Image (cartoon, rainbow, N blue to C red; front, side):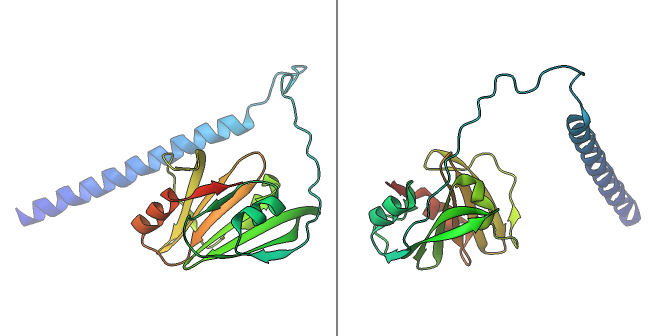
Length: 188
């Protein structure tokens, strides 16, 4: 009987691995189909897409402050803040793909909030050592968000048309981090 139970467990394991493999093959086939499909010759693409003009961001005068409203004014877009929590902040210039970028960093005890403007400079916010969670239920300040983590390090990325944001906690339990995200408010 004991040998028979081990055989059933092995069959279940192999069945699970085979199911996972087939699911991954199906996902890859759909992805490849979507990428490789071409429009018929002569069909006009993007005929109804109106591209927004992007005005270059002008450099700002770098500054340090503990006044979120002042930093938001310098930044030119809202900033996500933790109400009632002490922080030190700085606004500065950066560069992304040869373009001027405005960046604000707010440092709280154990948490860092970063913002870049324009939103196309979002890659400056990435923490490469983190893995993205595939969840669709996260939002912050009514904006869809993506959660990334590695062990107890968490980062939430979100953006709007004007700017991109990242809230990073290098050492926090997941529940505490998600509760902290729920406390964020926007300062204009």
